[in-house]
Structure formats: C-alpha cells, structure tokens
Amino acid sequence: MHDDFFMLIESYRLEFTVVEQVIADYFLAKQPAVTMAELGKELAVSNASITRFSKKLQLNNYKELLFLYKLALTNKQDTLSVASVVTAAYHSLATRSDQMYDEVTIDAFCQLIHQHKIIHFLGKGFNAYAGMDFQFKFSRLGKYVRIMSDANSMTLSVRAAQSDELLVVASLRGDDNDLLKALCLADKKRIATVLITANPTSQLQAVAQHTLITAGLSRIEALGSISPQIPMLLQLDMVYERYLHLYPETSAQWLASEEILHQ
Image (cartoon, rainbow, N blue to C red; front, top):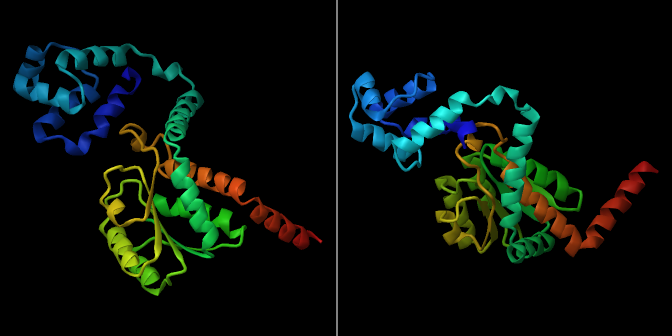
C-alpha cells in the first residue's frame, strides 16, 4: 500500500476537516518524517488531531502512518512500468469481479432479456457509457435497447413503458433518487426490473426484482487509474457471455443476418 500512500491521502481529501487538510498538505508536500510531537509543534495542531487524521485513512495510529510515509518517500515508483501498474489494477478488479460472480442472478437476468424484446437501460454518467456497450451487444441479437441518462428522460421512459418491457438500472453507487423514483414507478406498473450496483446496501434494491452486485472501485482506483465504467462493463460482459451459452440460437440468428448483409 505504500506505493499509493499519497493517492490514499488524496482519496480522502473531500472528507478532511480544516485541520486535517493542513496535516494532509504536510505529507503531500513530502516534508521530513517527524514524530507526532514534532509534527504537532510544526503545524500547531494537537496530538488528537493527528491521531484522528491517521484513523480517517483507515490506519491504526500515527506510528503506522509514519512507517508508510517513510516507505513512500524512499520508494522509487518512477522505476515501475506504467503498464505494469495499470495492468495490476485491472487484474485486481477482474479478480474481485470473478469472486462476486452470481450465476443464479445472472441466469434470471438472462431469462428476462430473452423474454423481453424492448429494454430500457437507465444510468447516469459512466453508467450510461456501459449501457451503450450493452445496447451494441444485444441489439445484434434482436433486442431494442433504449438508453436514458437524465432524470426527465428516465421518468418519461418508464411512464411510456409497457408491462411486457424490461427495465435495467445501472448505478455503481446505488444512491440516486431519480433512479429510485423510476424503479418505484416501474414497480407500480408491474414492469420487470433488474438493478446492477456495487452497493450491497443500496436502497434501490427494495424496489428492484433482481439485483446484480458488481465489484466496486477502491478509493485509490476511483481517483482515475481505472475507468469508472469498467466494473459495470465486466458484469455486463458476464451477462452477455452467459446469455449466449443459455440461448445459442440467438447468436446463430445474428450470424445468419450478418451473412445476408455480406452477400
């Protein structure tokens, strides 16, 4: 973890108090490693504030923080291959995604996709980008996929949806009120729904018929080393692969249509 010590501090930046910001700036400026007493005197802060800062970083105490800081100062991270760093991050995410594979839920999702020709995909920001990939894949298999990424479009889409259509909601954080309203409306209209989220305690689960839990990003990964839509894309790729396994005739139909276009 020492390789990412400075990124760890940055990942908590928005949660720091004014005093904690001062402490963070000291370490980010790569000032000399000093004892707690010396740091308190240098920054005019209390030992209690330094301890709280350490614990906010999920460390046991200042002693552990100082140990990691010294390692970070001496670590020659610039000698590491950028490709190795990024590849390791993606490998870690892929491993976590594999460990969270839920075949029962994915099979239920695939069955709903197979049963419904029209699919409404709701997601904001990078979740909508993942929806574009979902749209590209399943459109080739004869599905009509609509992507809605803003609150008004989501509401209009669900209001216009019929009971024989499918609603897929993608939200990595799982704490969006607009998506909650859309799911509640779909529930009242008896529209089949699937939620994909990295938040196992999401309030959206209460009104979704099926919930597919995907791997989430760590604080450091969320700073940008990994594209934020990747966890969602990995889960959707698993769904697509499983769908082709369960319903091979759909891919045969797609290949036949592609062949006609090339004649």
